[in-house]
Length: 606
Ligand code: NAP
Image (cartoon, rainbow, N blue to C red):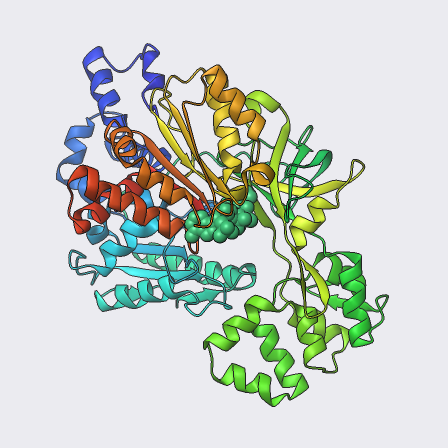
C-alpha cells in the first residue's frame, strides 16, 4: 500500500528532511503497522508533554513508558470470523479505557513477542488442521526453535474451528500449549469455539477483558499507549444486520446440456451503505427450502406452527427450521444427540470410534433429513431446535468491481443439487440464490478479505488461478484493473469440466484478450480428453513463463477448492521453482511460503 500519500501535504511541523525520513519509515507499513506507530508516538507525546523531545523521552525512560502492559490482540482469520471476534474485543477494551493494540497475525512483528506482557490470540483452524494462510509465519515462529522464553507473558487463546473435522481447533490448542511450554501463564483459560462461535466467544472475551483490567490496574504505567485506531465507521449493515439486496439478474452461465447449474447473480446494494473492494466476499444468509422444512416436520411428525422459545426468541418451529437452523449440513454434536435419543447401536458405535473415517464419511454424505430417516428417534420441537446447529452465512467471492458496476455485487454460484438416499439434496445458499427471482431479495453483508487484494501498484503483473467458480474474484480484478488503467499484465489460468459447456464468462475473457486488458489466458478442461487436464498441468507446461513473471514481481492468486486443488497448485509452483529456478525442493517450498507470508501469494480457498 502507499502509505506516504499524506506527506505530499506541506507539514507545518516537519521540515523536508524529516518528512523524507518519515516517508521512508512509513513505506511498506500496512494498516496494522500504521495504527501501531500512531499508538507508539501518542505514548511518546504523553511522556514528552509540552516541552522536551521524543529523542530524550525515548532514552531510556520512554522505552519503559511504551512497555506498559498493553493488551495485544492477534488474530489469524481465513473467513473473517476470528477477525470479527478480535475486533470486537479490541473495541470493548478501548471502550473500557484499557491499553490495547490489534494486529493480524501476518503483520505481528515477531521480534516483539519477547517483550509482550498481555496477549490474546483469536485463531481458526482450517480443514486438515492448518492455520489460516496469513497466520502461518506467526504459528511457525511460536512452534519453532527461535521462539523466546515467555516467563513474563500472560495470554489467552480463543480457538475457532468446526467440530465435524477431526482436527477441531487444533491450531488454537497447540498454540495455547506451546505458549505455556515457553513459560507463559494464562490470563484466561483457552476456549474452543465451534462454527456457531458467538456463544463461546462472548464469555471468553468477558473473562479476557476482566483479567486484562486487573493486570493493567496492578501495573503503574508511565504512559498509556492509545492505538488511536479510528473506529470502523459502524456500517449500517453487517453480518448481524444484513441488507435485503434486491435480485437484479439471475442467469445460468453454463450450457443447457451441462451436468451442472452455475449462476451469475447480480444484486443491488443501492442505499445499503455497503462498499467492497475486489477480492472481498459477500456473506449470504441462506434460507432452507420450504420443501426440506416440510420433509423434516413430516419425518418427525411435528407441527410447524408450534411456538419454540430459544435464546430469548419465540418463533414457530417452521421459522426456526427455515431461517435459523442448519438442515443441509450434518454436525457431530447433532449426530451425538440423535444417537442418544434413538439409542441406535450402530450410530453409537460410530461415535465411539470417534473421528474414524466412517463418522467423517457419514457427516460428509448425509444431511439432517437422511439421518432422521435412517435412524428413527422421537424428537420434540424444543429439543430439535436446541440440538441443531444455528444457520451460518455462506461466503461468495464477489465477481465484480464497483468501479464498473456501481452499487451492485455480482456472484458466481455453483448450484449444489444431487440425488442421494432416494431423494433430491441441495446446498442451502446456492439453492436459495438459484431460486431467487426478480422480485426476491437476499440477506447479505460484506466480508472484507484483506489478504486477497490487487497490488496497490498497478504496474505489477498478476497471475490468477481459479478453476470452476474459483474464477469469480478475477472477473472483479479484471474490471478494476481495466477501470483504473493499471499497466501491469494480467494472466488468467482457468479450468472446468468441458469447454463447450462450462467455460464461465467465456465472452468476457475473449473480449478482454482482444482489447488487451487480459494478456494471457490458459485453459484446462478436465473432461474433454481421456486424460484429466487440470490448471496445475497448464502451470507446469508454462513453467518457464510463470517463473519469469514471478521473478519480475508478479503477484500470484489462487481461488477455489482448498482440499485438493490448492495443494496441487502449490506443489506445481514448487516444482516450477525447482525446474526453472534451480532451487532444491526444500528451498522452493521455503521460497513459496515466504511469498505467502509476504502476501505476494494470496489464496482464497475453502
Ligand atoms: P468443480 O466443478 O468442483 O471443479 C472445477 C474444475 O476443477 C473441474 O474441471 C474439476 O475437474 C477440476 N478439479 C478437480 N480436482 C482438481 C484438482 N485437484 N486440481 C485442480 N483442478 C481440479 O468446481 P466448482 O464446483 O465451481 O467449485 C470450486 C470450489 O471453489 C468449491 O470448493 C468452492 O467452495 C470454492 N470457492 C468458490 C468461491 C466462489 O465465490 N464461488 C470462492 C472461493 C472458493 P473434475 O471434476 O473433472 O475432476
